[in-house]
Image 1 (cartoon, rainbow, N blue to C red):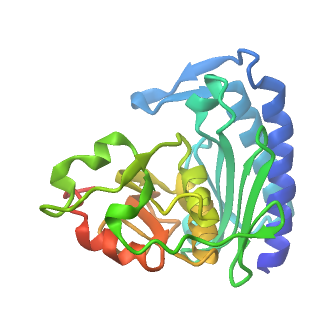
Image 2 (image 1 turned 90 degrees about the vertical axis):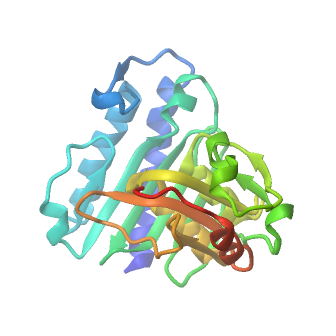
Length: 262
């Protein structure tokens, strides 16, 4: 049940934070992953090992998908799958920023049913379960009621604001940035920002947990073309992501001109 899964994810996220705190701002060992996939630290790997052992022992029938574990096809035959990013925002972690997050989710037949995004250095634990609402440190959160693209405060990389990605003459929203996609989604769920978007192929582990947090806070989430975001795909990527309050989301999707072939 989502309630049991959520409790499990919360405990695992808190254990992840304990490991991360041992390495944060203490010059952890760093490696560059193959194919320009970015850096990974000893903290990422230690957390990944702990999560895989603890979560899969608790729910051995679930599949497993993590940024730091070599993927296999086994998960495709499982109804429920853990989707995990041990540290989302590894570059922020390396740079000593407190805005990295642990992102943990359970998907059931492609739909996220339990999710946690935990920022241990900021003591912020976002959580959600299907049909149970979204919370920050146990208190309910809700998306904003923004109803105009030009008035929106949006979390996005600068490249997403290029004119060719927006309808002719549209007044662009005000842009802000956080390195962790999971944190961006959670901030939308909290209502601190009106929307987030990314117009590049997006790994599932970066956005699985935050997707449910936004949705259970009253928002909508889709890929960059306005299609439903479904998870545990054979290639675990989405075609970008757009998340916003229920009124703003369709307006953003109508104005966006997402690049072909995401």
